[in-house]
Length: 399
Image (cartoon, one colour):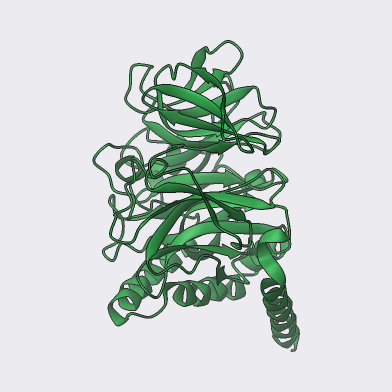
């Protein structure tokens, strides 16, 4: 996986090389390596990235019954949105089913780049950043680049909100009526209907990747206020007091749907890993680790039972700057150790052997239970995909 620390957690990193997370298991590592080779070939041959990713994803699920079972569990659990490079070379937003099926481009803007999509709490709207085509996405500043955009969650009716550079690191309020924004001057709470600032407070060391807790009482983000340059922290909105969740070279925090835990990346050694802890930083727990890959961008499913993540093997992204396959795992299978991982397994003897589902190439995914993002065309595609899978399963069962 890619070194999230350099792609997402360092001032000199660039986001046009999306960071990601590496899936688990020996078989996943082999599949990922093969996928990366395919990715490079695709880039050189100018074959559509999205199509290549779709093909790459479908093979693993059919090869491994455990992975196929996992895919079946999540297939109808809403939609995932993410950024990926299109066949025209720009970064567009895509949606897919959580198993990787029904993949489609929802922005299709060859003259611009889009990144950092976030579904509204009800899944009916999407906010994201839109940049000029020639502007490189910066892995340390992507939440402040370009202009903030709002659209329906299927990509239709896109509308700019403010001017380029305004409303940085926007995060939805639980009711979807406001956004919290973060810049060097502090934290601002903006009413979406009036565009008026409804409140402000000092940032207290927070500087990027800010998200709003499901109960609306807490903000999480990356802070340099706890003795390290990259700590995951939380702030009580009422008091404005921050606290460290983890201060061991951490980034990309996000909330569990019930608000009782956060998922984040941290780097205890050479390679970045996926962890979780409660909002006080207590009971930290490893979710996924793999020597040779950096794990980033963790997101939890709407039902709180699965984790989605992305990654690259190289610290600063793949050679073609196209990202890397995303992956999905059950949280009940954690902790998982990918690859050979002999040293990691000695450190975590309780590690399990659950499957990891390899997904299309992408970056910064988000997940909603809503059916709105799919649109009618995607629903038809998903139906055809399911029918094909059912037929394949019947043929496989024939003696």
